[in-house]
Length: 530
Image (cartoon, rainbow, N blue to C red; front, side, top):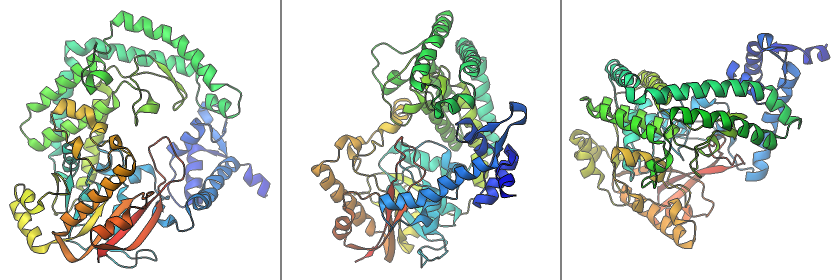
């Protein structure tokens, strides 16, 4: 009987229901299809009646789930708090509503913020630290995750970030919009873009190229057979990929010649010139000029953010190098990430339309959860900023409330030593939109390295931030800092800030965007007044 059950075949829908019940979390049909597409699970039957073996599925999930926690603790230590891994969540949960309005390196997931800000207690979090109507501060605000989650929980929040564009992202996320008027503005701009004769050939060229690529990939890289053959060592991926890359290159070059597709500028002077085809720059400038005509400031800002998100997806790079740019490309190429021939982007139209639609949906989702509390991200240096003064120029009433109530605590993720150049990750936005760059004031940027001097400066700078922010905190404050402290700097930072570390929660970081998917942890340091 057991043998018969083990060999049972399931449809994709049946498999999603079975897996959801088996794992105790939602597994969608898309999740199952992904496993088939990338060769993790064998498909049985034709496209019209695709099925999979329940036994294969069970073996896959047993291997993934039973080995992960044990393997990570073996590498990172038994003090790893697996509860804080949030491994039961799907990507759609960790990027819910406005948290995916714009890409941003180095942000934490909203559930981690919510865990420490909300009113629950458990065996790990034995007391509550914040309550409704409190004020929380994030002096390294980034893309505004703390601000958004504070709003959901009915907590006021102030952010600070040295990057003007980071502050812009955060404030766009937490703004309130007239979605109907916003949709009209999007429709108007999209219509003008599509009917502009200047861009007609670009759009037609890309549509034909996409069609030819699809036909070619369907023939030579069928899904999921191609991935399965690689997994079973029936195909040498590198040699086969290079062979087909050369074969399609002939089609591609003929097409670019026919349409006289514009590529890069000669002697590029800016980031945008280097990483975007000329026709895309023209489309970007056209959309931006249309956005400038809009009178409603909130609508204008969120449309700039949509344009920026679309721009990021249109850089002339391979899919494998989107997170860390290596060199611009102008040819079609074999893409190991997708297991087929891929191409650079020749028109922004698809991404502008896609992200416009997605943004509207996310704003609507967040509007259902928003509370009547105040959040704002100030642009400034957290080491020296006068929060009362800076905030009074934006909202005098709330500045007075803050001055009277004081801030209950901090929840923030400081930059890591020598890991990310925060301005450079959005260089295209600074080029086009005119935000002032403050690279030289970044704490621990990649360009300053990870040497002894960089570590010393980092330690001093983070301590200066805490000492400056302390002036605005209540006497019984709680400070939570999320860091991967591989250089053991935070005990010294706490000492210099005249604080004490009362607890440290070590958590595995499961959903990383970097190519290195190895075991990785970060620590949430809980600091109080010394």
